[in-house]
Length: 183
Image (cartoon, rainbow, N blue to C red; front, side):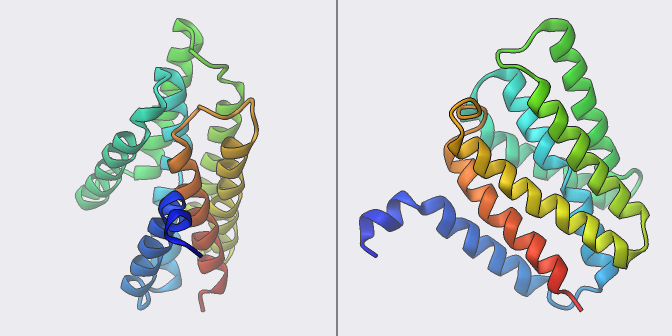
């Protein structure tokens, strides 16, 4: 592998590094903590796609991720409401706004993403941790495929930044596998 390939695939390299760091940091977490933590973050993924789709500016994807992470971890720190519930609510509000106001790109595909990934996250959080593990893992794994579709399918390209879709696909699949391998 040459330097040009590594430079061109920086999102994959960054995803591997970030995932490895979080895997080491969370190695001592219980199954319940891991399912809860990943379940609360999962709805951020379709929310980000809906927001970026609605504003029609893929270059806003990375700043949007930063803002979304601040929201998730801020809500977790406050421990007053479920971050997952808040993000699903915001996503539904953005979809309603897009339906009323209009959207630069069709909202149907992104609405399906909110429904599927939001349902997997919330159901996984409400279920027994052993069942929740499978639901939340499925959400992360299938969102990785969602990212790949947005990276490769012509009609979905341009919804989010391609670098984000690549990065997120790698992180999502690894998190899904990690949840399934937890003991």
